[in-house]
Image (cartoon, rainbow, N blue to C red; front, top):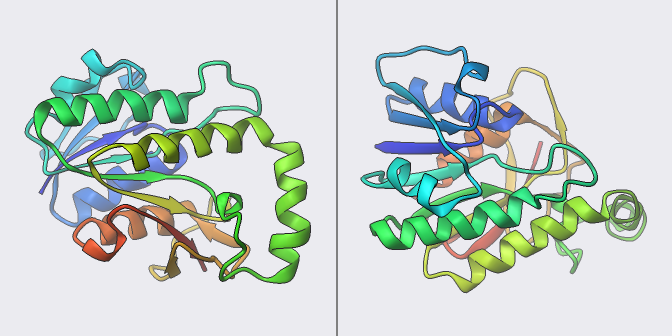
Length: 211
């Protein structure tokens, strides 16, 4: 497949590039600072792109079979609201170019119903995280709202606390529910995102994942 990865220099984005190349895909890595991505491969093209601007995104998604985004906030208070702003730009660019499949990273605390979560996760840790990271999660909620209003075949992957460890190559997942676990590696988030690409059961849904 021809894949475009947005936010390719971030923790999940780098893993998406690595896993996609290992799977044999043709990858376009789109990021503001191409020098931050040191990986080189004959099937990898690195392009300077502003993911918050639809005009900049349009050329890098045109002709792609699918788009994956690891974009999120760099800190607790990012006035650019990168998750939702990039979602609008990407949705506009993909609609204009006829590309339909999009998989993005979200977060487990956006599971407001508590379906598939433990009592502690839903009633204790979730509210605490919202209190500390309200701006981050509000931006992600706006992002998911943008996707729900689009006509794209989108999936929002909701992991819990992310770890910078080698991936295990396995994960649990539930559509519009979960996850039951408290952690997952960034490598396994990327693995899940790529695995979900052809899975029509995840289209138009948030999917909880965990170890």
